Amino acid sequence: MGEETKPHIVIFPTPGIGHLIPLTELAKQLIHNYNFSITLILPSAGPPSTAMKSVLDALPQTIDHIFLSPFNLDDQPKDAKGETKMSIAMVRSLPYLHEELKRITSSKRVAAMVVDLFGTDAFDIAKEFGIPPYIFFPCNANVLQLLFNLSSLHESYSGEFKDLPQPLSLPGCVPIPGTEVLAPLQDKKNDAYKWFLHHARRYSLAEGILINTFVDLEPGVLKVLMAGQQPGRPPVYPVGPITGRRSSIDKGFDDASGCLQWLDNQPPVSVLFVSFGSCGVLSHEQMIELAYGLEMSEQRFLWVVKCPRAETVDASFSKHTSTDPLDFLPDGYLTRTNGLGYLVPSWAPQMQILNHESTGGFLSHCGWNSTLESTVCGLPMITWPLYAEQRMNAVMLVEDIRVAVRPMPDGNGLIGREEISRVVRTLMIEGGEGQSLRNKMRELKESAAEVLSENGSSNMSLHEVVNKWKLTA
Ligand code: UDP
Image 1 (cartoon, helix red, strand yellow):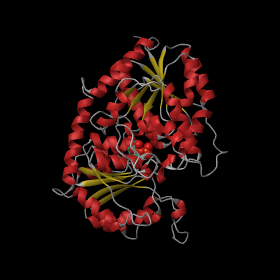
Image 2 (cartoon, helix red, strand yellow):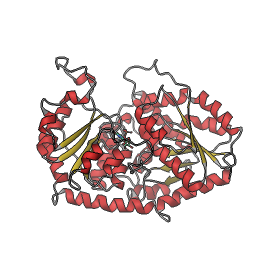
Image 3 (spheres, protein in one colour):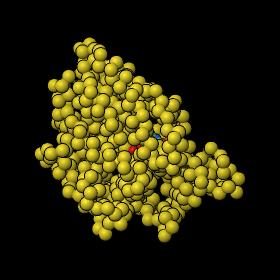
Image 4 (spheres, helix red, strand yellow):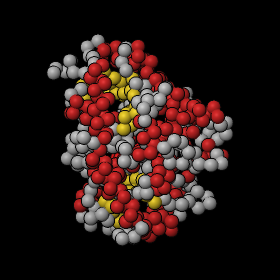
């Protein structure tokens, strides 16, 4: 089939590497397994980050990507939340999206437009061009169930989630204490809450929702979400785990930091990987506790170190304006931990690290991509949630799926070095309490491979959506 006659899919992701990675992986599957052609239409804040460039450079040539004219958020207050900024960025990109769709539809049969969490305002434009709109939901099914119920919760309960007297218990879901509910929903007066409510209400306009999870991971809630179609609820297709590539021989890959080479020289299952996603940062005080905690645990670790939050660095600290994350560590740290720890500033090839045979655990901020990546590699976790829906993910991992351990903060919200050392030793010392978490994660690793196999449930779900798209085209 010639490129012009192949059914075409347009993907319009929200800015952020955590959105781009799973959507590009979905795009690759659609190209390789189903013979679609694809255009990724990318809202742009300016030149792409290095991480984004490396994801895009590694795309096969059959996936087109277009950067829209940059949006401007200069009028937004300094303390505007990420969810607000992302939603406004999407809205301000709509006129450019319109132009691109006009161009694409003049020569191609577009079978669907896929957006993610914050892209629902593009539905109107998709409909104008007769393109069925779909959502790729990059979080888990517990979060989707919360968003499906958000409008009715908003009508029936005027207080804040943190003040709920009982954990929030939605059909099929893990009960979530109010304080652990999605961070941007914790202040109803904040615009981030209003944007979530806006998008959640518009989810009903989608023709279907592809969700990056799988049946064995969230059996209860997926059973509820997939039990016949409810009015105003689009069909839900669990198609996960869709994760980044594991192979270090992928195009565009470069072990510039040398961390994979370092891992090659460590014993099997001995290294704890420590990373807080694309934008998770700690206070300076917390970073120092983490440094000491890792050292005290006497376990091997590979830590992606980021500069602490600027406002938490004491101005009297001699290097307080440095841009090198390693400058914020305790004095003599690199020398003392030499041989035990390996530190990579800012960004590391996460999927290759998790897939390395020397890696034995993951201390993570529990972003959903990181959680799935740990799952497909069979690695138990230490949960350290920071923002977005990560607290909900942590509750699920520790209390429901039982593949993780969570360090407890002291009365001031600081996780102390002794506590960090304790959880690291719990997870990493062979034969200890961590063993049952590891065993459970290994079972899930097998399930994850199974659901993606030819007759596996996630593969069949994707097949179902694709068949609908092929009929549309
Ligand atoms: N990632 C990476 N190297 C890093 C940090 C992050 O490759 O140093 C990738 C990670 O593998 C994952 C994504 O970036 O695919 C982060 O997504 P996640 O949902 O875990 O967290 P977010 O950054 O969106 O909070």
